[in-house]
Image 1: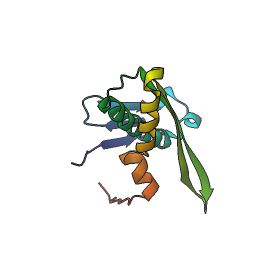
Image 2 (image 1 turned 90 degrees about the vertical axis):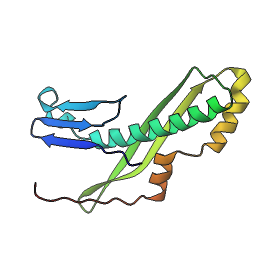
Image 3 (image 1 turned 180 degrees about the vertical axis):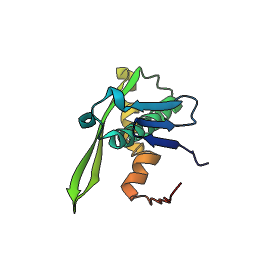
Image 4 (image 1 turned 135 degrees about the horizontal axis):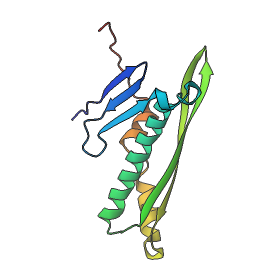
Length: 137
């Protein structure tokens, strides 16, 4: 199954139409944020996708083993560098903490060993193919 996301960019901002029942549409209004604060949204979405995928995969592994964790909290960062006048994301790092009882600590460690990544992080590590088809509307 392939998820379709629609993106509309105008001089006033952008809308991401996720088509997802949990997320709905994401609106960015440039009138509320100055030009110096607008860059970086794509990196934020990339890191958010990696965190959502990894934490969801870890959650599924824990719940499958009967661990009722209290919460999983993650922070992430995408590092970038400039090369030949263009920006590149060079790495994505995630820092994830899981709040579980001491009795479940061993199961958590087991899950952390088997959950080496998720679909998004594994795909990034493999250097996924990106296809772009762009033309005049």
